[in-house]
Image 1 (cartoon, rainbow, N blue to C red):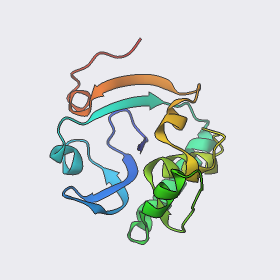
Image 2 (image 1 turned 180 degrees about the vertical axis):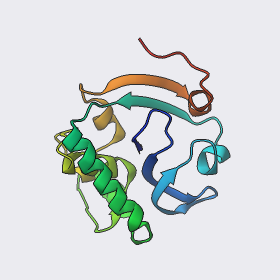
Image 3 (image 1 turned 135 degrees about the vertical axis):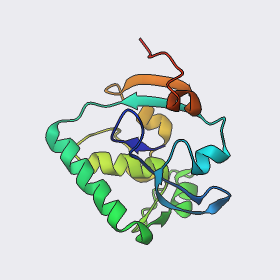
Image 4 (image 1 turned 45 degrees about the vertical axis):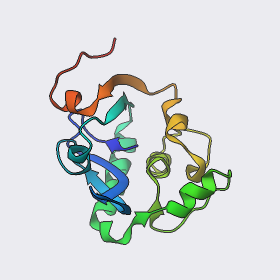
Amino acid sequence: MSIALDQDLKELYSFGRLRPYNPLLAGFVREDIENGTFKRFPDTVCALYSLKLSQEQYESLVMQLNKFKRESNRYGYNFLGLFSAMFNYPLSRHYNYFCSQFVSEVLINSGVTITQKDPGLTSPMDIMGNRELEFVYSGYLKDYANGNYRVAL
């Protein structure tokens, strides 16, 4: 799960692999839909949604992402939190997130209630279930990147 600031997915952020071939070396990443991990896995399937934000919410989100970018070397992947979430126990660790925890927390901190769950218990399905999200596309990420798709109606 990632959060993007543009429809072309040029500014796409998440918590995931820092190196395409090493799933254990993970942290805050600026995703590249044509290179890196997605090049390593060319048949990546995705579902894209859009969310309308107020100007204030958007500016708050950008400020938070800028902080993550400035301090990217401080952040790691919350493997323990991901494991504890399976047992319905949220485990927040300073500077550590798993992908849906990250998306949930930055949205909450921007004034957007995306789910009623604690970020440490939030799954991608919880976020996708939000009625304010507008479905955009589902299919191969490479097709979206190449513009080889039809917009959902």
